[in-house]
Length: 570
Image (tube, rainbow, N blue to C red; front, side, top):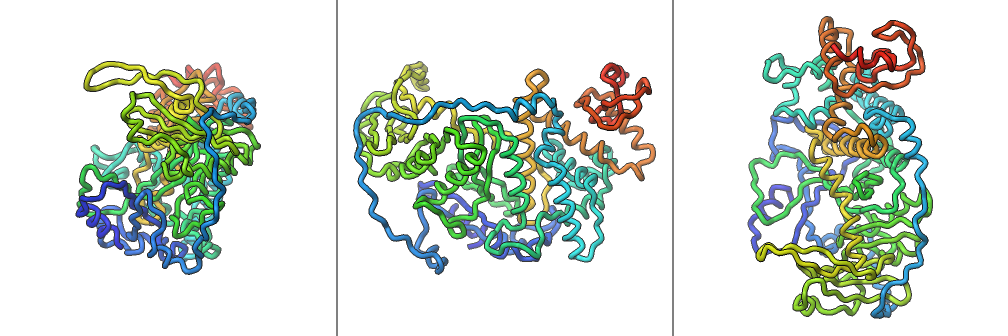
């Protein structure tokens, strides 16, 4: 089905009450050379003129498994034989977990605090010199394959990154308006950094993999090297914490859909689904774009979501087999997954659907609703110490855990909108901990959505590249909040600092003439984002003209610490 046909079908079907999701996968021949070509200008074409391979979509009900038609599309995939699972013995008692307590320290964070890195230094922990040079090499290789002498440099690539970051908080209907001479749209910071046609040329050839060595079975082969590098850097500099969240994120797909309007009450999501593991604050530790059950084979007898959780846990344990605690939602949680994670020495807690509780004999939800709020029932599996609790608050919720039990039962405040009163309801321990620690993926999504990259191309993976840049900025800002407790800035100021430094420090001064002098003067006295950093080579101080080994990172001028304030004041 084409995407517009799917949307029409969903709008016409008013009887469905289940939550459905539009899953957009990369083209089936995503490794093909044609998918590197732009489909047109960002303002020119509409969705009906985009290639059909880009607009193919799958409508997947959230609770459904693969259909018969899907299985027919997979002749190589054999149907799993239903094995006889051992019958679990459920008992009414609290859990007795045998996990060790969390005692790990994080020397890496202490090292980052001692370095006092600026926002640019924190961002370049992820887009480091190796990653920048890799993108430069692959882009030049691809341009050479197209008989184009591009000659991209790391300095120019940083200018391109700066413009992409800046587009998150300053956006125009057309990206070329940044270079227009009209007083209502001209942006001298962008125009003085790089020429418009040079930016367009670099952006059109931006590449992340060698087309001659792509894995045709991987639909994200075009960006797989970048995913591997980002995951390695994210994990290398991740805060070592006990609590983590796992969930789904969405990288928006920006293909034009005409003037289609989605009716209220039908939560349809458009874009690439990303499996994400984050800290409780929202630092992205590990991510993997979903290729759907048609293209990814689950393992260990789990569904696709459970298999992704196990992969995330394996990535965490590469740093050390510590008693991590993972919080999940009902899309992933099952008693079987809890058992697998327990054997790995990992704690887990999450909401769970009733059919994944392996016939745990809890009180019927209809009966529980008749009782007062705060009522609950629970059972523990005798063999593996896994607890399932059914709790009644505003609705009935099932929660499963292999590490946290019922006791101590606390009280939580409940607001009654109709009566305008506050009441106290009983809350089991595992419910309280779940509500406190879950939500890391949501916090990351919230940060990314505020100032996400707006400039996009028509390649199918262009929006994914913007998502990776936004995720790296989110992680850098999370490290800034941890390491710089005295001089913290908000996310907007953090992104502005990185964009300004990249555009000013890497600007092409060969043809600027008087503009560079104006730019230097304006930025020197703007009192925004000036940081003093160490430099290996001694230069003359811009104020007192004696030798110094420190400089202003934004102005790129040698300045003594004692001269720093005077140099930046008129």
